[in-house]
Length: 164
Image (cartoon, rainbow, N blue to C red; front, side):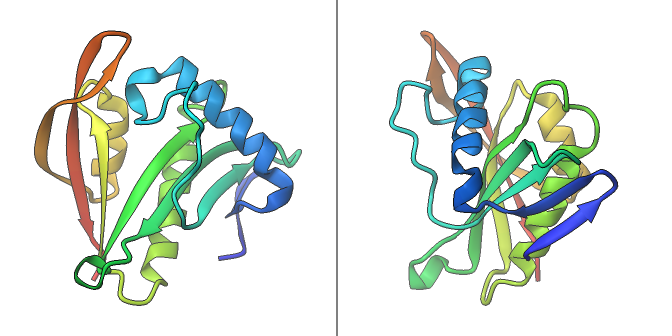
């Protein structure tokens, strides 16, 4: 996937020229939604290996991103992880998250040997859970106290999507 345009939004894989904008977007999200990400804004945030699909508006401003990583071990290469889903404030609720996830799923279907995707979403984040379910992700478990942010524990819902 090089670039795909959806309405006034285009989706493409993160390139070095947008790395700083991506970093700013993630740091802002980590501060604003500490219970929704494993990383913290004070951590040395380094994304997992794999493509990061980004959404850009018609002014070429980064307005959303989602990471995709295929497992590397022989027995788990059939699985891919969706991680770091973020849509910039002011752009949420406009379908950008759905478009990003659709692009990530399409990209995943093109990866050799990848047969399913998985993700973890906060139990409290019903909006995100509904989005994932609308695209076919199914919950398969609840991890109690998956994250601890600001002294409070948050449960994580594990979800998966069969690709093939």
